[in-house]
Image 1 (cartoon, one colour):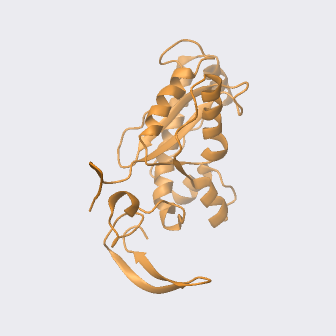
Image 2 (image 1 turned 45 degrees about the vertical axis):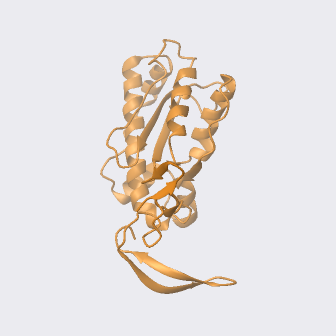
Image 3 (image 1 turned 90 degrees about the horizontal axis):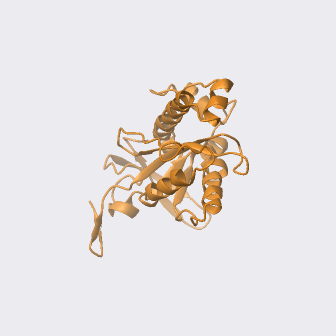
Length: 228
């Protein structure tokens, strides 16, 4: 069930879920307060903050430096609106601190799937959390707490950390529910070498469902009994 590449045997792909919280909507005047991340299938959510290595609320260099190391370990990454907000914010900070760009990674932005495939009243993650009834829920933060966090209040920053942690947990749970609709997810066989299995979850519980007709050829159509 694995493929030999040189001396390295690749098994399950390492999927990284991530989310950032910042003091503003642009990197010119805002700083990144914390970056939450979680590996697929692991329980722990890591949420380091801007104050972990210094007391300067304007210096998020160490925060983005450490996240870049985690990012480098991923086979691909998953976010919600991350292509338009989270990654540009991080990249701008990398530019500011002379760190160089993030390594190229396949980026699956679930907001794009939500916008393209469905018709909820909103394409925000909170709307899908409520609509799907996920196990975890996003935590609310009032404006005063955001303001105090932006000025370095550690209790308020702890609230922001909890908010970020919940976002990452909800993100993974929404990913699980949306997975049957994710036509842009990299095939699992790229990482495992397993060809006769579901390209998303790797299950052998698949059945033939005729053919899909394209403009120039027919494709065998399969259905996974586990992930859908």
